[in-house]
Every structure is written in C-alpha cells, then in structure tokens.
Image (cartoon, rainbow, N blue to C red; front, top):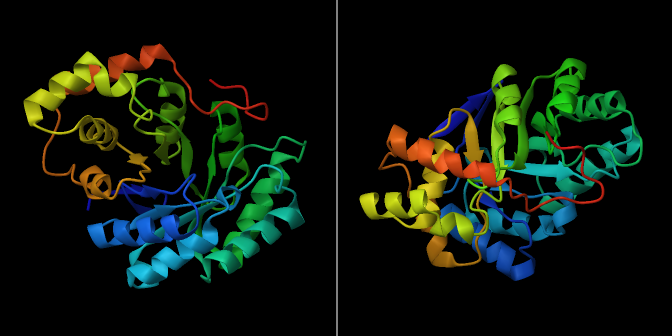
Length: 275
C-alpha cells in the first residue's frame, strides 16, 4: 500500500475512519477493513468507540506492529494532567500499550495554554504511550506555534478536506513543516462532490466510482492521507482499491477547482478561526 512519510512516521495513505461507528458494528467493520487490506485505523476518545475499535483490531488477527493506530484527545482535556489521563484511558479502552499517533483533537476551548498542551503531549510520547504525535483542526497560526513549541516533530494536522473545501493555506503549512495533512470527511459525504462534472467525467474515463476518483485525488497530492468512513461492507474494499490507476494533471486540476465552493461540514462553537 502507498504510504506517506512525515517527520519520522510512515503512514498508510488510506485509513479506515470510525467516527459515528459504535459497538458490534464498529468491531465488525474494523475487522473487515483489516481483512480487506487496510493497515491504518483512526479513532478518538470522543467517538465513544475505542473499546469496539480495539476489539476489531484483535478480531482482525494482525500483529500490533502491522496496523497504524491513531487516537485523539478531546479539546476539554488538554491541561497537563487531563491530557495524560485521557490518553492513558484511551490505551486501556483500546487494550494496547501504545498508539502509533496521538493527536490533540481540537485546539483548547477553555483557555489551556498551547505550550502546556504540547508539553503534555510530548510527555506522553516520552512515556512510550504514542510512537508519534500531532494535531487536528489547527489553522496555520496555531500550527506554526505548535511546531515551534514541540520538542518532538509533529507528524500531521488532521483537518476536514474534500473537493468542496479549499485547504491550500493549511496544506502549505503542513508541507513547510514536513507534516502530512490527513483528510477527514474526504468524500464530502457524497452529495454535490459525487455529481460534480469533473468527478463525473473522471468516473467515465477511468471506469471507477465517484468515491474512488475523489480518494485518488487525495492521495495523488503529496503528503495527503485520507481516512474515509463507511458502514457499507462492499465499499470498504472499494475505497482501498485506488492504487492501480492515476488521474491526469488536467483531471486533478479540474477536481481541485471545485474547492472554491468553500463548503465545510464540521464547524462548531468551539472551532478555531479558520484560514
């Protein structure tokens, strides 16, 4: 599988996202994803499914070192003691000794200084609880500050990214810092992205599904990783089967042109000021 190298990490370019998946369904789908060839699974404390994801990893039967596992620390748990307690609890729920990547899920919404959070995240790395560390939903200014504050290199910034949302500023900052940009909601949940003319034309040209075209658009961008989520077993394998064709420069540019729509799915009262 194609991988992205970023500040010492080697991350599969397609991961299995688990947001909104719960219980036995989450366990079954994670196991199916691993059986289909996924080697990257993404979860978070806030998702309320780490026990189920951990069970799926065990059901999948792979060695722990064969799966790149990410979890995230919620924005209300970023003070020094709270952050370490959150990650330790995540390890207990997942029933693993270490995650491959621990992320600050959102910037603090309750005034915890960034230097305190970054120091706590580094301390978790030092304890061996996370092989790598990074952030999520950080705009450029905060990302630059986090990089400057961190003793360990930050591996990625996980952000919403799809053909209907321009993230050029954040992407540029990630490239400048040698970081990957991990795309959540990479398919824009279908809708307008699937029916857009540049996507439809590429579907016809390559004989692929709209989801495959859009995921291929993601991974053809240097340093971009996508973590699609699906509840449909047949789409698990389909979303991974994107490494045997290539979009032309013209097709890539046409799909990228859709980002002027500026349509953001995830925007909350605790969100930072976006770029």
